[in-house]
Image (cartoon, rainbow, N blue to C red; front, side, top):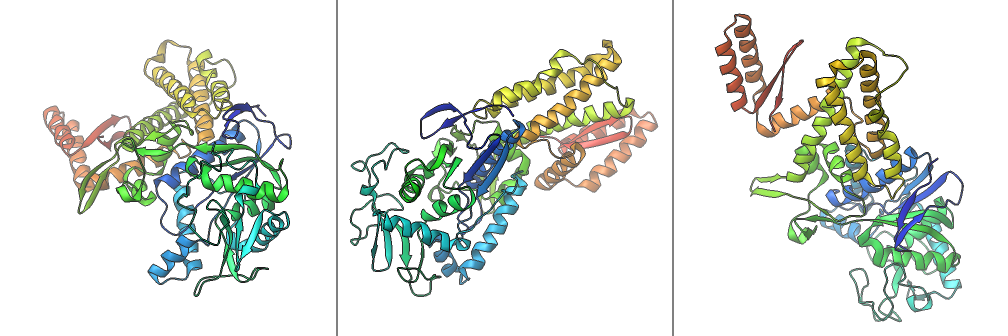
Amino acid sequence: MIPFRLYDSWRHSKVVFEPLVPGHVGMYVCGPTTYAPAHIGHAYSAIAFDTVRRCLEFLGWQVKYVRNVTDIDDKIINRANELGEDPFALSARFTAEYNRDMARFGVHPPSVEPKVTEHISQIIGVISKLIANGLAYDVDGDVFYEVSKFATYGKLSGQTLDDLQEGARISVDERKRAAPDFALWKSAKPGEPSWESPWGKGRPGWHIECSAMTVTHLGETFDIHAGGKDLIFPHHENEIAQSQGADGPDTFAHYWMHNGFLNFEGVKMSKSLGNVFNCEQIAEAVGGEALRFFCVSHHYRSPVDFEVQVVSQAPPVVQFHSLEAADRSLAKFYETLQRIDAFIAQGGDAGEGAVLPEAEKLVPDAHAALADDFNTPVTMAALHAAAQLANRLLDEGKGLDKQVRRRTLARLGKDLRTVGGAIGIFESSPAAYLAERRARLVKLKSIDVALVASKIAERTAARGAKDWKRGDELRAELAALGVALHDGTGGTDWSVQD
């Protein structure tokens, strides 16, 4: 178990993590509101905190990871009405799609995935506490939190009550005592799902769900609360007011973590700007692991500029330049792993013994980087250095003691996978990944696989007949089709040129 530091949004600085329970981390992450297909912004945040979870486990900690699903909300109800669909069925469908999409990007399932509709009694319990404590009031079956009664409101976001403006989720309602007051319980409207409560039939407000689910699954006080920076205000600010208003000033999350924004050429992602791309679109274009590779190449707190080009609107054709570059870099790592595996397989186990000192650095360097606020870019630099060393030994290592060379390459292959796994990459077999990538590029570039096989067979025959000129001509013809040939002892293989 390795101690670590994290940047705490509450304290606005890096701090040493001190667990409530030695060796354990309780972590709550705000999950999706399931009313539409997941997009790249959802994936970016999910990957960021799945990476934090993996890093913690790599550092030796036991993690209870809770990520909620909002399965009842204004957006869900409105979308269901538009489609003529039951809101619970719609939410269940998009929840399944979300989990499928996140799995594509190597996001592990949470330890617990609580849903709002499964916690109505707990939500009512928290609201009842707030009313009893004089922090909430009932108006015609709607219950509002009275923000002015919570003295430290605004500390997380750095705002004061005088600073607050009516935001996107603060609706104007003349029945409220003040504009910043927010809904804890909404009275039932015709045709909407509702539940019985002490204030009449209704449903939860958005913010209260997380206060109820954290206390249910992690207790009144837990270690880390995480989410996107866009949630700091009002959502996380309101969660603090609710939870501490119900359970006391020293309760709720000890640390707050927030991932940076994903921008497109300097512009924040926005549906109104048409720069929101669904996970399905990303996966088909570059594969799931390339997006993950791109994300972990940046620090989770940093804003990330994402380069895309809309080639045409009809039919829609988009080039994801940043992800295509990540895909090429990832493929080179897998090619290195494949070369290491092939080299080791040829000579068998080299046994125990010394390796080159440079090959012993990767895991300690990764431990140090990831223990410093989960610094994945520094870890990526260490992975690149290890891969470069492996390729150098494969290409130029014949003067080295054979067993040392073999042991060093075996160590590098093992540690590349270990450290890669700590940030969620290199978890496929090289052969499977490279085959999937080739199939994807073949489809995208409309390459005729049968024609390629025919030309390779013709080239093999020409070379067998020592017709080198024709062999070179066929290589050039395949290159013109976007195909690169790779001659080896087992014959000729091919890949799609990037």
